[in-house]
Length: 165
View 1 (cartoon, rainbow, N blue to C red):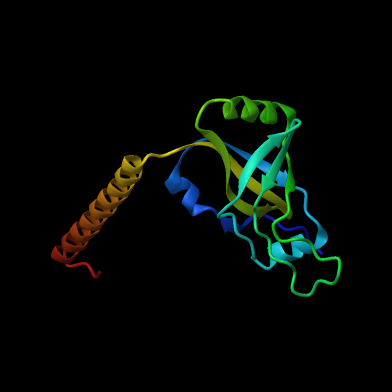
View 2: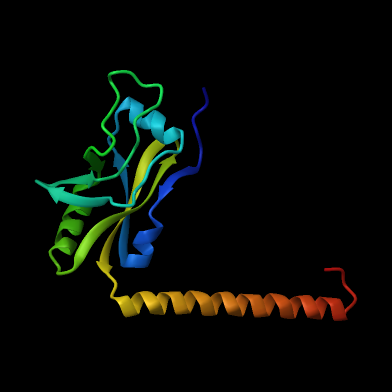
């Protein structure tokens, strides 16, 4: 069987980008059981409540929900078990120093397969205040409005030149 190429996203934590200011990001491998891999390949996972902790110099993904594999037997995994993350020592130390700052946390942004290996993208983040969230929404809306105006202007210009739109 040929080896997979590229990146296949399984789950994204869109809420994290809304609730936090994202700082440094890291790619970490995930230690999984066999039925967890099968469940992920079926595209079933949730990172909504997940977070990362550093315990005794090791990184752990907590509260990530990977549902039990439907065709599994008594060897099936627990849905919300703690999973070890594979990072370099330098990265773990850097994350641990960042966590000692007040208000910093480590959140998973996405879970995906990269060339056949399960990976999770994690980020050191600080929480946003309510006014920051409103500002993010306002920026997004103004960017959309500008894109719409530009698209309609381009459409009108093309019609005036007799081009088909």
